Length: 63
View 1 (cartoon, helix red, strand yellow):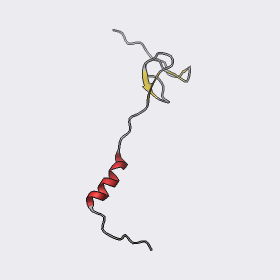
View 2 (spheres, rainbow, N blue to C red):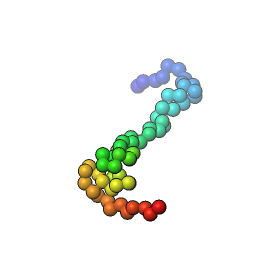
View 3 (tube, rainbow, N blue to C red):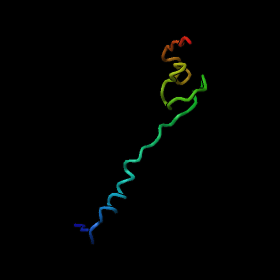
């Protein structure tokens, strides 16, 4: 059975584990129809289109 040769300090152990919890930013792309930024592989909030097809009916906001 494998046994460690020496004690691993708390600092060394924690620095090795620190990379496991890094957050990654969501991938943001331009909508192919309205050219506004949206999350990748999601329906556009502004126009309601996904993959060239209208999926959600979006109401215009009155100014």
